[in-house]
Amino acid sequence: MNKLSLTQILLFILLLGFAILVIALAKLQIIDGGQYTEYAENNYIKKRRLDANRGEIYDRNGLPIAQNYPAINLAIVPGFIEDKDSLKTFLSTFIDVSDEDIDNFLYETRFRQFQENIFSYNLKEKQVAKIAEHINFFPELRFVISNTRKYHIPNHFTGYIGRINQQEYAILKDQDYHYNSYLGKTGIEKQYEAILKGVDGVKLDLVNAKGRNLDLFRGISNNRDVINIEPINGMDLNLTIDLKLQQMIDDTFPPDLNGAVVVMNYENGEVLAYVSRPEFDQNIFMSKIPTTVWDSIRSNPSQPFLDRVSKAVYPPGSVFKILTAGYGLENKIVNRWTKLSYCDGGMQIGNRYVKCWNHFGHGSLNVIDALKVSCDVYFYDLSFRMDLDNFCYFVKDSMLSEKTGIDIPDEAKGFFPTTQWYIDAYGKYVSIRGQMVNLSIGQGEMYMTPLQICALYAGIANDGLWIKPHLLKKASRGQEILTFDDFMQNREIKLPFSDENIAIIQESLRKVITNYDGTAHSINRPNRNIYGKTGSAEHKVGSVTHAWFSGYDKDTKIAISVFVQEGGGGGSVAAPIAGQVFDFYYNYLGNNNAKN
Image 1 (cartoon, rainbow, N blue to C red):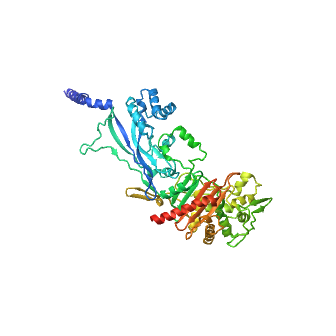
Image 2: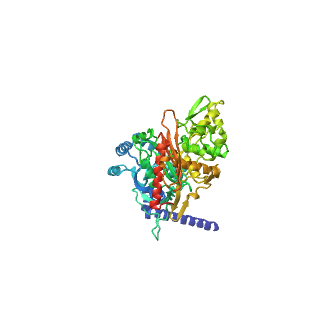
Image 3: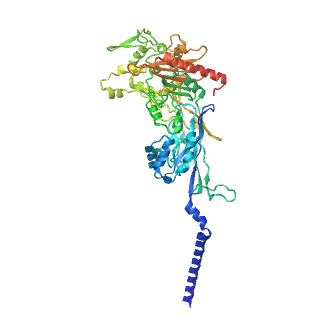
């Protein structure tokens, strides 16, 4: 009896479980079958990235340098391709692509068969119109709306953004980047990528085969998306650049010559102008570059992609002589009254007669007058009394063979040789004294950037306090504000000059401008406080010299370096450019009360 009763209980439980299963299956397959069949067969969960807006870039006064604008892109979903040959024919008709381009793209996206892979960015209106007429015949094609970058002035300091490549994606895929991302490639865009980019949001949608949102993830009471993370836009940047000054220099620089001009506030290191010539239009990177255009730019002998302000190095010529003079003064080899060898147009050194730039000669001079007229013979003689390796340390401490640390990536370091370098390069019997003769006047195996030279002269103007040059003034997003000091510390360095010797160098640079025999007297202005030094640097036999001018204006607190590649004389070519910059900025500040 007990046995039978237990069997009945077990049978009842089994029948009850079976009945519940039947009811559940009936509900799923009969009552709600149509709904779930639609979900299962015709729909899928689509994760949509909500792109953050990239921060925009402005000058110190709020004038736009780089801004965002809407763009229409063409994407391909490889898994929906029905006829690859027809697709190739269609794309090559309206977009400048080859069959090889398309094959390479499809190979690269072979693991993203059902995702929208951007094939062509920032289509032109005519392209959009033509493609739209036929896009319904190609289910694999999609128009995708996003932002593109517009650069308002051609320049090198801003840099540009570009589409992420495979190598970059492999590194950054876990840092909120995706295979359609853009990121900073050079300049400020690269330096401050982390704060310009922002953080993308995400939204989950259930869509049917036609792409219609079925609103599965909608809230019941307030009709808001349940799974929807809003993006955080990037921070806007205000640079230290003054666009009006930048544009004035662009207009002033000789159009047929290459070179660089950099202007900075010597009291705080803010870079006010950063001109590298020739420039290039960064907007070419915002859409596919035609092969002919790309080849013409890359083969241009003027190298428009080369940033001559901070990434290219050149012999500095006579603008370097303040370092030779400073070393002699600091090591008490000379003082302000010491006169060295008589200059009759040159100097006999061993078995050769080395000329001064002035073949008529300068006579016997002290250090102040030697800098004023840029007498080579004075520095030849001074070099005989100097130790190369100690001088090398002095140059390094003056930041001429060190990166300035400006907030632009890939800055050049510059170079100044040591005794060992010469032995390695030319053998153990090399004449170091002979090499020192060249080095003393800024020639030979030394190379500096215009930015390094400008920063040195800014330090002289600032009574020996060298300040790191920088381009960021502030970054902001709503009420959140960051300044350059939040990103960079240890910005000040004391140059290896005593106060007394700084004053001697300053006096010399003033006489270069004010005295009639000064090499830059042409830019003297009554009742103004302009200081400077000219230079003409030889770089290869038979070529025109590079023209240099470096100096500063006490009235406006700016330092400047002008470099004109193969421009000729520093006094006749580079100094007049600096004079126009000094005049413009002096009047600009006075007329607009813009000093800040």
